[in-house]
Image 1 (cartoon, rainbow, N blue to C red):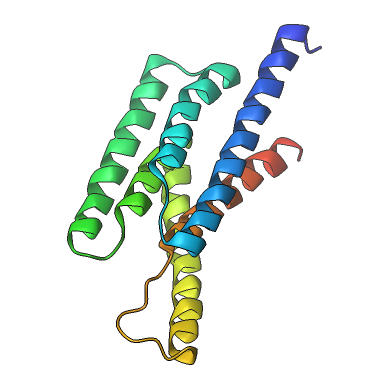
Image 2: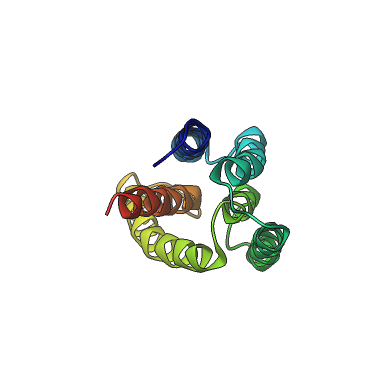
Length: 163
């Protein structure tokens, strides 16, 4: 039997996941519209993770440390990509902020999904760039792929909870 405290905690956990989903939708919009993922969105995502940990319960100091380490490694790896000009700073911060929310195995899947979706996003925006005969390099909103991948992982969590 589920008691009221567990039910409230579970509701809060789902509410934080809902907030994450909204933040990801905002990041998709701003990345397509302005080619930017605003710092305030990335900060909100990062700050929401500890709330999710508390609401989810069962997170030990070791679990939290693993999430922090995973986010730090994710940030470091994609900061190298930023340094090489392969992605924007907002994309790097979005990856790292999302890594706070997910187990390291899910982060690997997040990166895999983002790579696959990112290839599709790249082809679409290259086609648009060519079709509109724009000069210079096409600016690819890779944050779209990252955010869609995050939404996919959230969906898996919710769907798997009910199966």
